[in-house]
Image 1 (tube, rainbow over the protein chains, first blue to last red):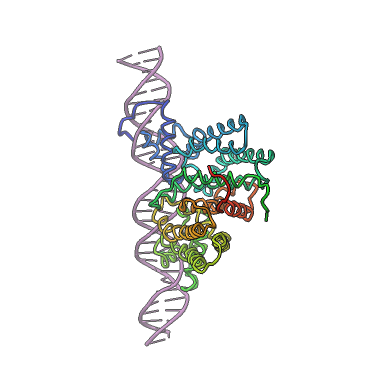
Image 2 (cartoon, rainbow over the protein chains, first blue to last red):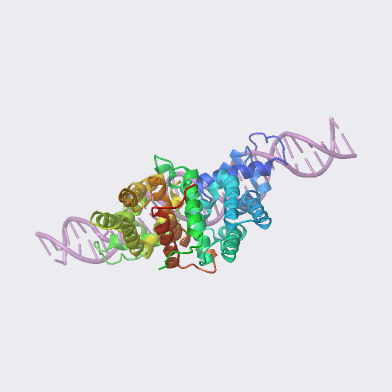
Length: 214
Length: 214
DNA sequence: TAACTTAATGACCGACAAGTCATTAAGTTA
DNA sequence: TAACTTAATGACTTGTCGGTCATTAAGTTA
């Protein structure tokens, strides 16, 4: 027999996006398991029950966050790659630039750390992210690498492993920022970090003409 | 009025190490928050109450795992660096080799992912790990880099940022293995990955004599 | 303005886990 | 072997949180 406080204004249209924004913020701050849906609802200015009016359950809420915020950026990058002409390293830089501006500099930057952190305990969410984001991202980098190798711009290397080496420092930058960064008194400059990474790659991927190989 | 099953054999000496082994395995598998101390105790062949006889609480149990398993390896690496003579890149390779054999190829390999995953929710544990492992590890790499730059073996770069770039792919390798690896049907070869990383570093860190800089 | 539809609420349920402590019995001492 | 010390147990307390649903009232229709 609940009576209590009066319902807030009825605004059916605005609720989903407000809830998604609140969910993103709290998921990034607390992680998936430790985020309380009651807190998500409160941050969006509604009650817990209202959240369940718009999202089936916690999993569905999380998938919706990814669906709305990250998958469109992957699709953008696929379009960039599709219409790209010119050298392959330029393509890699453009993909990174778009990823950095749409994900790296927004609240979505915290998602990769969340996924890595919770993958073992929520394998279905991890699979969803892998299928829709990671595998498509790896494919993009792989295409650029294969192109560059075919044209002689890059030297021949194991493509699948090189994809991981290319992506790892970028992921690690985001992961660090949303985990251990609080322990460091001196915070690093991401621009500087990315520039060094790109410079190393430019030099490292390039085909070597005269050098001896071991 | 609990009566129930008879106590197991009394073996005060063996309990702590058995509990630490069980705790490491479960922490790595489930994470810190999701590991139930009752499961840790059960895996060590004792009851939950017994665990509290030997460890103050969950935090103390975790710190003991780090203290026993990882901090000694850092100390070893500090000794290796202290008695090293010769070129700085060799030192980097030796430090990596020892780290890989003592941590990367053991159950402790799962700890970096755990730390990154739980740092936000357990800042005291993160600080403990940062003080005792990360800052000391970064200092080791930093010393090697500064040495190499002073002797002209390496080109001059921002040391603190370069430390991160050097370490990131190694950390990412471990993190990946204990998180998303389950989603990939094809698992990558860590030896190959590390070899590519080291090769890129060898080339990338080296002082460039004649090349133009942008 | 009466009747109706549905957005919104929050008390409640069930499951789960950290940490406590009264009780038991294994092993030791006299 | 009686008295004693302490390793070991697990029921219980306390608190948390995902998800449900009976109830309320905002807004709409006739």
